[in-house]
Length: 66
Image (tube, rainbow, N blue to C red; front, top):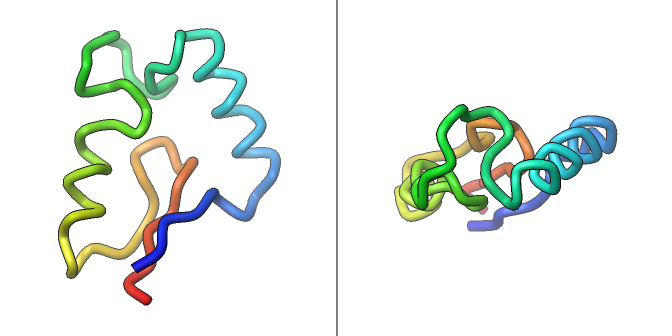
């Protein structure tokens, strides 16, 4: 299993700018809750799922099975 940044540098740049503007909370979510602090609860749970492979909600991170 590996978690890495999206290879698309433009997406990474925009999401990181959004994270900075929202004090580390997912820019794709409206609420500033602990569950939405990057790395969000949804993606942490997906990381722990051995069958999950794919991007987090905002597409900043990608989890592969290898």
